[in-house]
Image (cartoon, helix red, strand yellow):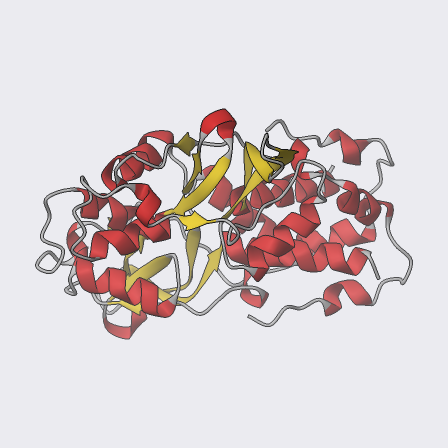
Length: 164
Length: 164
């Protein structure tokens, strides 16, 4: 649908205090807990985890919650279509790996994270903290997930406040 | 995550013009096109349609685009887990049916539709127009879909305007 941003343009040029606050909101205050699995578990078990945890994506982690991959409902559904033996094949085969994972951090503005979700057409960003491992390489510890559901809830909250 | 609505409270009690506009936005201006299938197609073909159309849910329709059911990526993934023969079983077996389908209309406020998405933990609402069929029963013609992606895009637009 064509965006009707015109609704917002006419009123005034100067920034509203609400808009200022909106742009100051950070991912860390709106993120959800991450649901993580290890890369050697089967695709089947990953799907089961997704259902028991009621989430749309899983982070795949190594030691110390280090980010290794992401699997979405879409990835799992695609593998279910093929002739893959879901009980035998590990998720590491189908997961999205670094450097192809789009991430966010606790201090990133919510607006920027939401933009990443729409731009890359994904439902979830892992929320990470970068650190340098013993080999001097940059790694990412998973500390949360930020999803379109988080954005939708925030949108509803903001709109409800307007009605006070 | 605990919502930090306090960010918005302190400033002022009176309603901002931005917030007024936000609450006036209607689903009809932000919805996407519906992607529809017939109820006799196989679960397998429904999954393929979801991938070729790149959507997270499908509306199942009868004559005249009348709403008969909804299938989500989650529904399809669940059926892929079991022993179901995806190529033989029609989507009608697994689809969500009336009266369990949560719907919206073009003139419903976007905020109300977003609230339905969060409240019912679903990704998509079919956008419908009600009519009375020849038997005097209420039916719903599917004219679009409204998703968390639509809300996220709108959120980004609103935030970007604040930065003008």
